[in-house]
Image 1: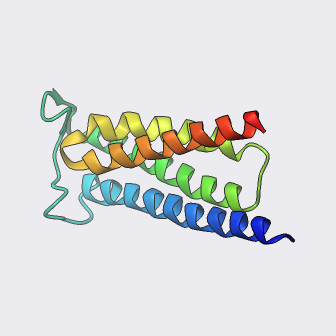
Image 2: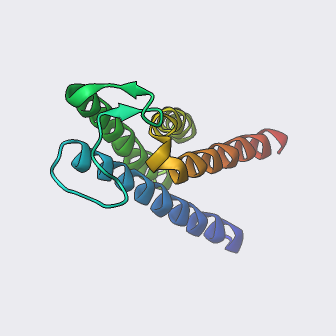
Length: 134
């Protein structure tokens, strides 16, 4: 293995760890919106879009389940990246776009998630562009 390949593999592991952490953070919403845990920075609520849309208790639990799906998607994407699964890029792009929608709906507490998702999407587009230019 060349030294460049070693650097690339190391970078893949670092990105995978960041993706896994991002995925695990999604589960904070799950435990809060299922009222299993109280967090000062992530209060239980039954509204989205900054309080503009009331979804009720059932609606926020559905939202929490969707958030869990995104969290699992990031964990699977991290594994797909380090194992160099053929479709890792497509999976990560889809789960990031999905997560972006969810975090935008919960902007008041997930604004950093929106920024993280945008950064991931920019990185993915840059990766794809570099791969097609070669």
